[in-house]
Amino acid sequence: MPLVKHRKVVMLGYPAVGKSSLAVHFVKGEFPKEYEPTIENTWSKTFVIGNDEFELDVVDTAGQNEYSMIPHAFVFGIHGYIVVYSVGCERSFEIARTLHKYLVDLRGKCLMPIVLVANKSDLPPQRREVRYEEGKKLADSWGAAFMEVSAKNPEDSKMIFTKIIQEIDRVERSFGDEKKCRVM
Image (cartoon, rainbow, N blue to C red; front, side, top):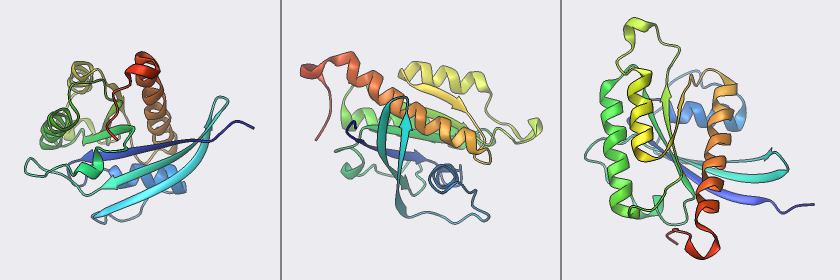
């Protein structure tokens, strides 16, 4: 039986963009009925991708704004990041851009496994403030994966966490064993 691969990821984003909803839907298989602001939670789930079994720890953070500091605990020992914004909130998109800048300042310019997630794709078109193309362009500028999802859809939640595992693997393979850029 192959070894279980342990991975730890951090979810970052503006308050009320759906970070907790995405995490809870993935881990527990249920969509939260009410919004409850998060201080910080860590969720764990073991799942299989292909022939590999992963134990994934998901650090679900309190919402950040432009004045939030990213603690060093969200840098050291972290394998990847899921940065979430709401398609219905231009401000959350700008905060996503700021959070990426903070991550680069803390970790350096090495390749970082990141999935930029545009949540709340189920909103009516008239409530949309951020176009798909804007999110994709931002993710491309970071060298990150991009997904537009609805936390209400369980398949979307699963796809996000599958994608971050794939991104972690892609970045680790791109360096070879002697050139990995990981802060411990």
